[in-house]
Image (cartoon, rainbow, N blue to C red):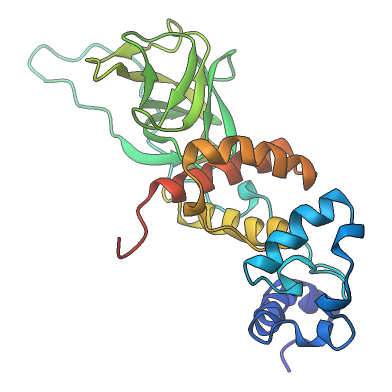
Length: 285
């Protein structure tokens, strides 16, 4: 065997648990039903919380293991936090000292790199280590202009409802979902573009922690999806992200995060993953 130490067992525990859970889903939780029969249960004597999950689950063909993981064995440890599962994007070149270019030589454009916010929520500041002018959520697309110490200078464009840049929520698209908040438009260098059907694109600039920037969202989404399967699947059958719209996921996540005792950062990251998946058409549609 390949698992001959406790450390190796713990490292593979979630993977092995998923295999067992899938087998039990396939055999209709045979091991549970050797002792427990639905026909013998008094559903009316259950608590309201149990009724809320049990009765709809039975009607939709869910099985014991869909909700009752961790009964006979301890649940595996949750996957690593988002920030620990991804690698920062390659840093942009440091900002060059400001010097006057010779009259006969054209100024060279600053090297830029496309990237994304890879942590749940990060501050946007007007200067390295300065006061926040807003907040950006995981998956915000941006352009890294330069690095200064532990911070990166970035530019990005999100959307706001209205005709001008203003303090308030930032969205991924017109009629989309929130991806951050703007607190000080002036200090964030906010520039509004042409309004479209009551929505305006707003370009911002400032500094974010360089370690929060990733070149690909794939490892970020993969880690959040594992957390979704582990955290939510431990109590009920998992919902397909497309079961709800991005707008519907926001209040649903507030309730679920409270029930699961999730940390605010983990809940924010999971919500953004659910909303992004929900807004992406299913393959084949």
